[in-house]
Image (spheres, rainbow, N blue to C red):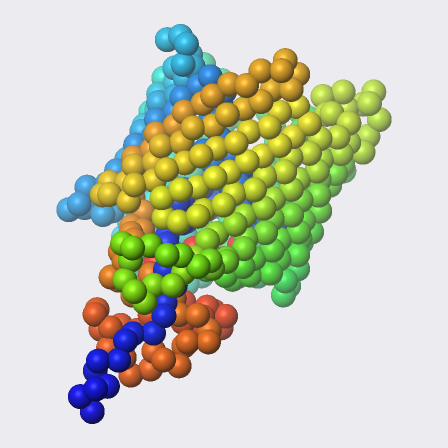
Length: 428
């Protein structure tokens, strides 16, 4: 019996945290139309935009929260050109979530109920937003209130109120501008439904200033989309999303996004002997936009355009991304240090084929909002290969918990996973 305690531990594969998961845009998704976030749009937006700094520009973002009050945090951003002082934009966002509302339990990890205050040297100068969502009933409401602006009309047009109902299979909502000079009611509306792996949706956004009900018959005010998706939403599970959209009856958009989780062998002298591999995350996305109207009626829309992008996170520290389009292409290398707070430095190179020049952009991010960490001795970030799962039974690990099993991931049993590796939400 004594020899059983001397048996070597089974081989394991390290699972590093993702650079940015859940995405920051998910913290304000209850303020947005579900139509604008589903069909793979949120994932594609992160793939096409994150860390791709504008050529000859820099951006610094600091995201911090106090250690003794996890309900509040602050995000400050400064960006502008590298070669001149003009055009530098600075803003700060103070956020308070985990509010105690009637008939609602306080949850500091729930991002759907919050109040924030935004200040900037551009428009709007001062703005506040209030969002409340009742998950028990699936109903939510929000208010976007500009408090200070350089233009009076902006205060009237930017004041938005919204109501929504969201569940795992249905999302319906509308926004209103009660003080807008344009008589449009509602300002926008959407309906999205999910049936199995299929998602369909329609959205109303008036483009003309008519005051009668003919605007509801104008097809240019309507958009519709259909999407097919596979995957649980956890970064440890592969996913695939394909979408087709007819936007405002003038533009046809086809897109797809794929997230792949692969394991590669690793020989690192700094790791324990039982570590035989590491998990990598690979993302790929494509979007094609084509005009479906005559050029005389939609001169502002190009005939067709496309963009394709891919990213590869090799370990907890390095991320490589690239994207290409008809006019330019870009590549990004990002390095992240998982201190507290964490530091991320990225450099992007953009090749403008219209002028034949390559320019650089730089970014620096400091953060302690998301709690992701990477510890070699913590089995919460270790996943057994499927062929070795039986060896984990009866083994007492250092922290008293068993490692993550591939069978749990396949069966979508995410209860034992760290919060940053679970799906960030199933409601539409």
